[in-house]
Amino acid sequence: MNVSPLTVRELHEAGWDIVRVSEFLDPRTKDPVILAFARDQDRTIITNDLEFSALLALGRFAKPSVITLRLENPHPASVTRRLLDVAPLMAAELMAGAVLSVDEQTVRYRMLPIVRGFE
Image (cartoon, rainbow, N blue to C red; front, side, top):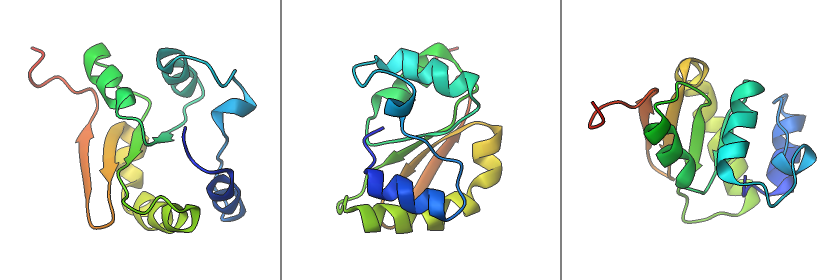
């Protein structure tokens, strides 16, 4: 979600199994439906939207993983480069179910389901 088609193309060329939500769902599809789609397809959501993390926490879901981009420079080349750097380092966490927040300098993550504060 909210990722340039240029970034998607470059990641696909780098060997990623990546698709845009609009290839499968109406662009006006609500976030909970997109979340369910990603979970059913065993995919990771890459987005700028903080709502996906909130929905995962509130629903206590264990999947899908979400990478939330918090980059000051959202240029497709910068986004692609950062994802290519971060994803391999966090592959185990993403496979297990995690929420990542990625900026230019850091990666913060929480494993799913997020239950602290909800118990």
